[in-house]
Image: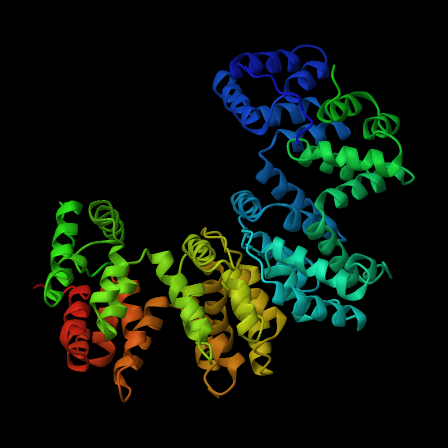
Length: 311
Length: 311
């Protein structure tokens, strides 16, 4: 479930006017921006952008970029975009890093629904005039990443128990032999439906007495292993995966604001409530409290608003 | 351009009534079926199916299957389906053969537009409760096929001449070393836009003094070579590719009705006019004449109707 609080009735024109006023004159009224945008869902934000454009012949996103700065600016920018467009931007930033951030690409490819991933690929092409897989293929190593990004999985409930059993064994054999980039591993992880993969991971545990994720712990310098592990975790239990990303982003020396923002912004309208509960249970601290301790200023206020803190 | 003649005004209810009458009583009135269905486009055929279902609580496709037989039945069945659904069926038949028919899969993956291929993948899932790539991956060898099937290429005009030049050289080096399944070859053919690939193939010819398709002639027992050659031909010049499929289906001992039907049915609403012209030019015989010579009965009448022969 979502964490943001959204009013039932919204006037997009009034919202646009408040935002315009917040951006005018001496200094920016960040509080007003957070109060509006932090309480609007994706469809509403889109309408506000359109109303703003019509009223003032100005792109709201560009205006906000020029008014805001730092982590707060990046968070607002990511939040205000359509989800598919946001993912396209996140993926592009991840790909263009000197050392591409595989995790972000795997996360987008494996935790979004088949239709959502498709929308990301469309948005990526519209924005960057390349296909997502084209850029991933040029900038990364190994075939699994490209295969995951191009996946358009069957999204139904029908599974084949016999296939789950045989493919659990194939995965186990490959992992035992450290063949993390084996073509059969890639085939299974990138083409099977998520329901089928859950069945396969369950059989793996039944057959081996230990989970596939446990069997994938190990050398974090082995890129293929890390890619495979991240993909399995994203496919197997996205909420648990996101909890861990949040935990790592907060617990390290110097908060990883990019990861923190990314997870909160991209899950706030989806399943951040459950992720928050997992976080609390795992860390014995409410996520809001941990975020409040590690962040400050408008950035902190904005994240807490997205986390559902009542004003 | 299309070859079929379609009237401006169509009454779907009347069409359904004629088809019902053609299927009732002693013997089937194949001529009536051809007169109606051979002169309706995909959108109209869909409406006729719906009108028929509403009027008679019966599936028109099932009824036709029970009334017709042989090559004529298969041609009508393929024709009456929505194009994406037809491709899903064609792909599934090709995959399930004891010796999978790679050509059909490559043809569908490489000659359809990115959006059309996507529609095929959707239709495949709806019909078979698997993803297309899932079944291709299980039943075939080599990574190129799966990569081509999952492609969702950028469909715009922007190309990068520098990339075309460097990738033309990469392709040439791989072909020289007979590395037909090289990961760079797969990356280039499966992720680049068709416009970009055209530029690359043109650079190839400029740099090498010979076309990439010429350089890919050779041992037809080498599966990877054949797959690559077919993909390049489909991507480079689909009309020329289809002309050759037609030529081969007619010129061999015993006509290849599956291929003949497939090309005529799937191109009749698209570019069969140009393909016909290419055929005439290349074989010094009009395609209609060649088809008429090699086929007979209702099957022949139906194909000639789709080829645009006036009654």
